Length: 92
Image 1: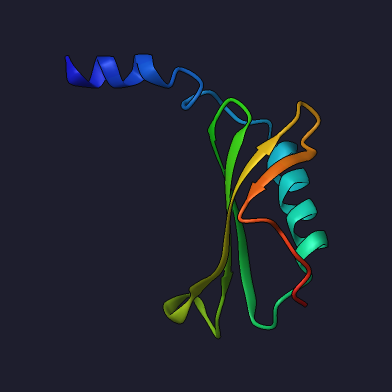
Image 2: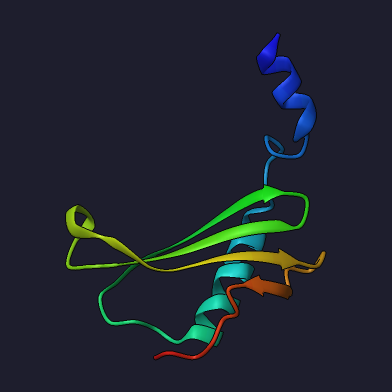
């Protein structure tokens, strides 16, 4: 019963995400941030509706990876970043 209520709260959470949308969002973040040395992965996760979490992983390999930057984003229907917490600033 509890699992059913949880599904009702976020009905879009389990919907398939358009694969290109993750790429579009990730590219925008990297364009604004720059590329850190030791970049391993840009992880883009759709949370709900127009909200995304983007994590930038760096390190020598996956065993010692750390999250160098993490952003909570609001995007429009085309994947353009409308708001970011924290603000994305050029660091590299």
